[in-house]
Length: 279
Image (cartoon, rainbow, N blue to C red):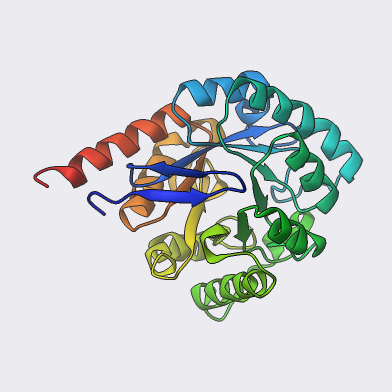
């Protein structure tokens, strides 16, 4: 990992970092996200940018376990104004946490760069051609079931084999439809239809996903896994999150999705300093 340059090809430019991972910071433009401090708009995005985020991830529909579905019109109303304000302020890459073609189309027109789809483009297959045509990077996540009942769907013979197989299958569909491999990022979906032990397995073995040809994103921040392991409420799960993020980075993941940008950026700087020592 020493001296490694990470790069991500967007539609109109390529972003790079000498750090061991990209930090993706969360802005939830909805009213139902499990961590209240992630709810906000441009002000929160500005704070993340000033703290050193590499990417801002804007979402207008909560997909946490038990969340309710909202229509595309409402989701667009929530995310597009935030994206426009961010884009006027900064050229930072913006990802959109959506599973709807209409939302991604409007967001792209407003200045967004990346699709972050918890359904891996299954819920709305029109996204595949759209992202291929526009040369948009895609984040493909594994989930089992729908958000409203997702934590009831935890039956696996081999959780890592099933998750990695699914991600390879969805990535192959993207490739076959014209999305290049350097624009595909996979996310094992920790917390989406997995129990505590299954989540731990996916974190432990994330490095095996990194040996594939795609970038890997870990989205662990303050999830219920840390509540179960540490006995902490959501507001007190930062330290557990940092431990798991550092473990993931040392195992080669290319992106961490976070609520706490300052802590994540500091962790990345320290990891880089240690890895580069004596080189």
